[in-house]
Length: 75
Image 1 (cartoon, helix red, strand yellow):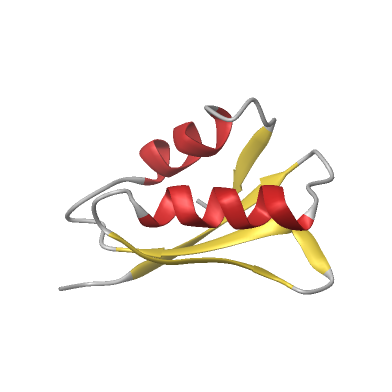
Image 2 (cartoon, rainbow, N blue to C red):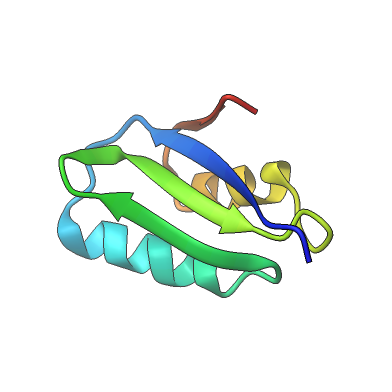
């Protein structure tokens, strides 16, 4: 299994609960290994995923389904 990473920039300021909810929701997607926000960089969501099971478009769409404005970085 190959693992890739993608960085998603979220334009809104998310509080701790919103970040936790988003991470938990991303974990439920098939192929997602590890979604996480790093302290001090709360606008950036790093997602490790299996590209054979999901795509960056699906990951971005999931973030946007919460009503957040977001874009992929470096993809």
